[in-house]
Length: 186
Length: 74
Image (cartoon, rainbow over all chains, first blue to last red; front, side, top):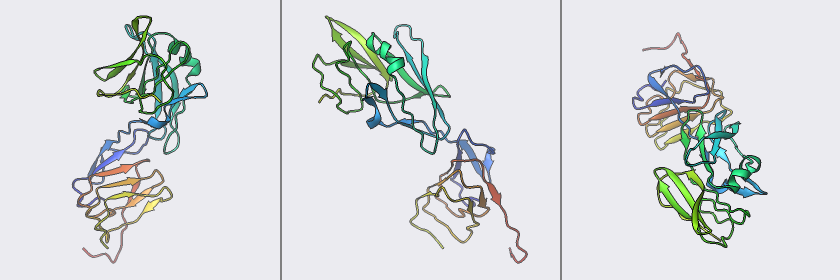
């Protein structure tokens, strides 16, 4: 097959079998389907932080978090296998993340099994009273009644600083593409 | 039969076999996606799709079926 299709490349998924380096007359390479987080799904609902993630079927995704940005130790807080053609990952983070969320710095990043960081554009910010949170998806979730956090981007890492008692605390950071981001409040 | 305007083709999940297709060509086709349900593809399927750059398979490698015909001429 693919006769006279000299430009064609055949892509196969990592979890499938029977593939060799050539399929008929065309080369075979691995189809890199990076999981994608639906921005509109990121947020807190019923006191649970979650998001929808789509990717290849049977792909395993690990969520890691750490609480010390100065000496980050990344620990998995959730693992899920995407099922179906479009996988769904709805992670309840209340148990695992409520404690670090309420203390200074929390950092989270999403990786796939290859260790590659899954870029996303969401940051969750909460104060000690859970009075505010911000999701960096451009959606407005709750009014900020205090000072706005400030944001800085270092490489592909985005940090959010929330002024408190005259000092800046990094309360959460998140892997995100470098670029300009704005907090939006309703 | 030529499908001149076909650029992207996503084959339905219920399809299990794709025939020879020697008489069909889609010179504008750039990508085709095969569901995991496709188990076999005719040897001359996607013949002369000269713009095709990506063939995406969501399942295991399908068998390529070559039909032998006693009346076939070169």
